Image (cartoon, rainbow, N blue to C red; front, side, top):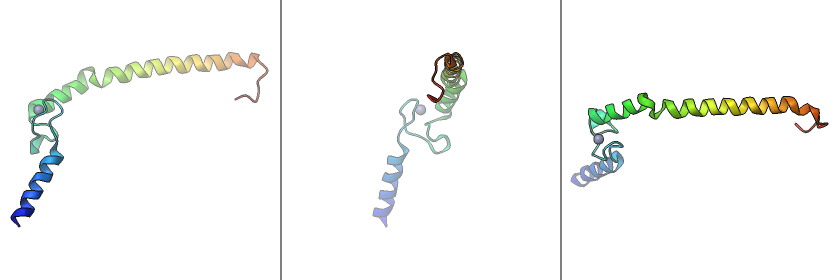
Length: 85
Ligand SMILES: [Zn+2]
């Protein structure tokens, strides 16, 4: 019985890993973070560009590339390549 409880504890500890912000020990209420502070830091990262900027940048670039691609295809019919699609 004692052995089981010890094992369970060690497994839980292993699964907990570490806080992605400060590498501290995650706490139950803030998992996977160690505290509200670290959870807030992560949240603010999402809001302050960590998440939005790359997505917007990628989206804009993607759109531009797609537009050019479509334009190129539109102009392409000049060549006799009807079944080359
Ligand atoms: Zn932390």
